[in-house]
Length: 393
Ligand code: ADP
Ligand code: MG
Image (cartoon, rainbow, N blue to C red):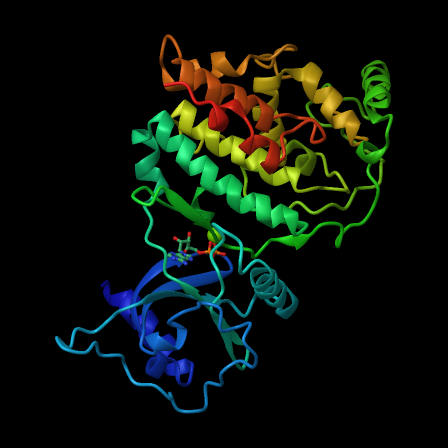
């Protein structure tokens, strides 16, 4: 283990009373904006023998009381049984409400298949550590190139299974991307992690977006053609409107660039679990197109341009108007019509023709990367897709 990592682990062991009696830190496995994750050996393994869910069994154990059980030793041969956990240290910069939200949602989802369960969580002063079972997985950046269509099927089935239960609990994950889905190719299964941005449907930014109205499709067409005849004040000739007098809209934009759904970019104020389905589509596009990251935008405007170079400006305008927004572009390389998914996948992966199974996967891709969230496949519908129910080989 790297010297600096060792130092960092020692720091945690020294600053969090009792942690070293409970866990032996092995390595640092993740470092993000809001947390650091460590792999650790669980020294009180048989505490959790039959059930990872000790959180739900009443009171939480206290750090200050001495460990009640010693390291487990197996009978005759004395072989020590080892169980690893992932310790997620959530940074103090993360607000207490945010931390509580993540732990609460994980607790609600503890029995869901393909969702990484929360074993327990500890707090010392302002530090919070969540304890999760360690899930061995492969690095997506290495894995995706070698994926056959059958591998994509296993990967997606597992991810969609996780989302089926998450969405069934009316929870939006908001940050679906490869680093938050730990996939194990041997098990052909993965677990969904990182509910740091997740939210219950309708809790924040309650507003009703234009897209929630029954007749929005017709209205959005009318609006879209109205806007193209009456461009907003300031004009769009120099790229963005110079003096846009409209009030800025507040909408949850949390997520990762490249994976944000169009309605998130268009600041829809009534976002649904369908935003996660778009991100699943982006993962599938990465796999089929054999490019990671597929989208590489620096900001939301860039992201819209990337999107419009696929969908064309006409469909982008309709999508924007659906949420009461205007989409204008004067970028010469972005056409009006856009391209078919088959064409894009072929270009991206540099193949002449797609196999029948790739064509099936590409049809699923079209259902996931659908601009209109109300037409986009749900997790349940996606799992019923021919790609899973009648795979061709
Ligand atoms: P962050 O909010 O910092 O992104 P995550 O929960 O996504 O935190 O964890 C960061 C990384 O740590 C993951 O991408 C993964 O590599 C690793 N990790 C997290 N949980 C586990 C786990 N249960 N088992 C194995 N590795 C994990
Ligand atoms: Mg993460």
